[in-house]
Amino acid sequence: MKTKTANEPYAADVQQLARQNSDFRRVLNTTERSQLVLMCVPAGGEIGQEIHAGTDQILAFVEGNGEAIFADERRPVAAGDVVVVPAGTQHNFVAGTGAALKLFTIYTPPHHRPGTVHATKADADADTSDQYPSSSPK
Image (cartoon, rainbow, N blue to C red; front, side, top):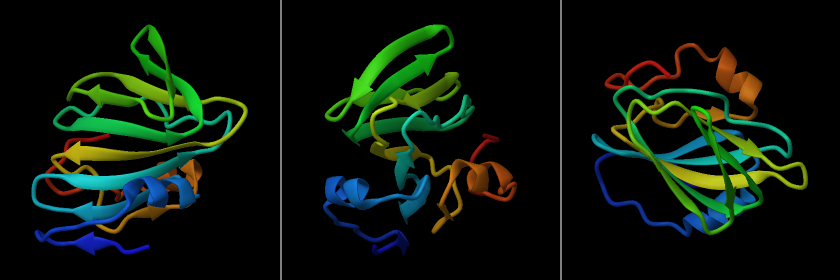
């Protein structure tokens, strides 16, 4: 899987890459103003409740189903859905029990260190240095 960390064009079949991805988080491309990341949330798992104070996030789901949770509101998500999370919005995404929830997400500005790979959510939670220099705390 090709990872790029530069302000140059990046082209790939991101849906295919997302379907093949088994890492909880894999940063594919980082520019000065945006970041492309693959995610795989295991069946019954979750991304975890979070707020990105200075970062907008767009999530595109390619496989599986689950729920998007915003404060006290819950909405179903499935392959083909897109969710836009404005900066400052409390959110979480939970995978259904049948299969992993696979997606790609775009952060603007970047939120994670370029090239970051977390095999599991536990790895992501333990990585206290995973933050792009210009982003706000997770």
